[in-house]
Length: 205
View 1: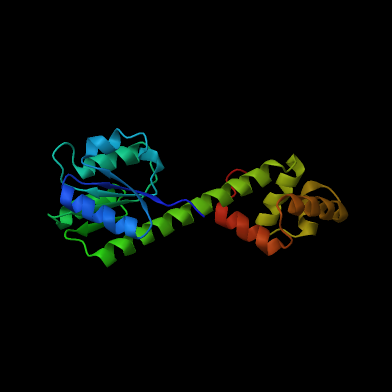
View 2: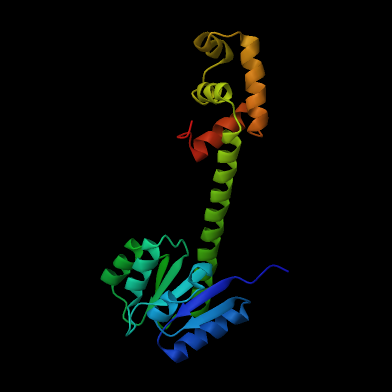
């Protein structure tokens, strides 16, 4: 059975925080409650949450400051800001500082669950893209200098004869290098190779 997704609820209003925590636990999330921004920032679990629901106005340190500190520390966790005093200016500030969304209290249960699920889906997509990028970088690291050189030509759309002329080798030798390069890159079609390098970049070549 997969582990439950961990969600932090940071709000100084005990009743609202507990109500939201109950809603999330009912949806089978693992919820940690924090009564203020300082408590959250000082938590050893701060980096472990899949999502953070954060009140904007709190007496010790406001949610926008908490968000800014976490983003400055490189935290990629999606933050959902909530407030009873919504206004366009604060919403813009929150989104510019990296918040995933901004909801006004009282938050409809269905809206909150929908936004949480959207935030987690985005997090999963980011993680998948990062893992794929690391995989591509690992494959590139296994290429020889000649295979890396050949890959540049292939990505630029050069044909075997053009590559052979540029490198001063035979077409047959190009074919051998290309076959080895594609095997190391774990692709069978040139279209897949070009799509991979276009998607994840070839800056390291």
